[in-house]
View 1 (cartoon, rainbow, N blue to C red):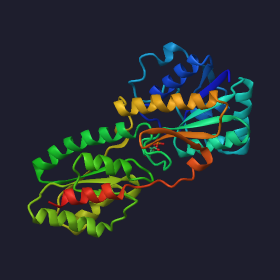
View 2 (cartoon, rainbow, N blue to C red):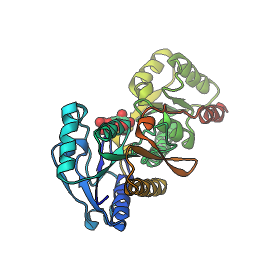
View 3 (cartoon, helix red, strand yellow):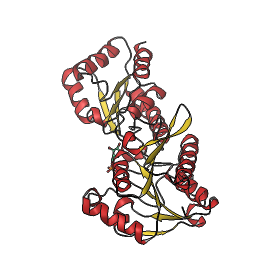
Length: 320
Ligand code: F6P
């Protein structure tokens, strides 16, 4: 394979730049030309394609965001849109494509693969909601970002004997809430995978207050409800003083952690190796600290697993 392309798609994640760098350098080392596609599938349809250069990736791996920019494209989801994208790839002579993104981006990758393009998916989403891989690029940075904010919020909540509710990202997945909650010693974690009636949650907070624990920290994944609605519920049903914070995009930006940079480098390398072996239609990931590749079709259909044991561990830690 002489010419490959790489794009980032969907929500950006810290570590995407480290991954682009790895794809570029591994490709160049294998005598390939590496082209960057700007603004994900949207840019692909519009032909926003150019060579990646050393200058583009130099001194960028430590930065969040993505030098290739990203986008969500409705047009690409249509048959016509996918065909337009295919024509652009053909016009540029791109024989293999690497897509860095989440499960929506992988479905797009699968569609292109079915039209005959060799595509490899690299998991990049802070949500960690892809079941075929233990970790996605950006998740580790996001939970570290959240953990650091928890301690700031706890300081001020303690000063006022308040309960602090922190809403974190994760549309369908509670992993950010779970891992940040465990590392930040949360008193209660509300996630879609372990639905808890708000009545029970409010009772826990009221009981904490009664036993003298005046400050509790609650992590709520956006998929389990909003912090605002939860705070209103607790105010209406208990005498607990409660304040909510929506962390929002602060958790998706910033310098990637060492773990994310290393993961990004390893996954980028494997993706290029697969293309160089003439293979397409795979997603790369990490299982038990080994880099693995599974068919894209399988990757998008594996249900995400939730670590119930970790959730239960936190419940015990929060008991006393
Ligand atoms: O998919 C990653 C994610 O960060 C979700 O957790 C969140 O719901 C969503 O992206 C936000 O996306 P947008 O950038 O479109 O607001």
